[in-house]
Amino acid sequence: QVQLVESGGGLVQPGGSLTLSCKSDGVIFPLMHMGWHRQAPGKEREMVASITAGGSTMYSDFVKGRFTISRDNAKNTIYLQMNNLQPEDTAVFYCYGRYLSQMNWGSGTQVTVSS
Image (cartoon, rainbow, N blue to C red; front, side, top):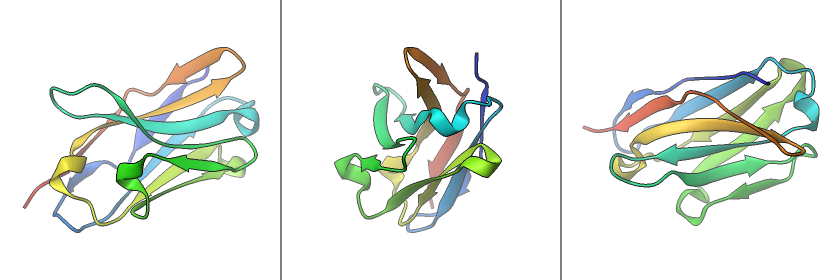
């Protein structure tokens, strides 16, 4: 079992920026497909962005051009740079890591966008 710990959430004003981090304790991190999902109050969890072991990225349409996912294999960490945040981005953001059939999730970090 791989443990994932998110950090970097908080309260930000509309138009502001935050960077989320997700650190893994697994030695297989460089081989893992990683990503972020989010869940807003009263809504289902949805995919935000993902990054393969090789560094290829994918984004949901609602974050394209605003969010950037990246990884640092030397630090066993992925990042989600979020710019131009809007109230509708308010959610708990969850990091995940997948290797073969094993899926691991972090416990989430709250992002609140409000004036």
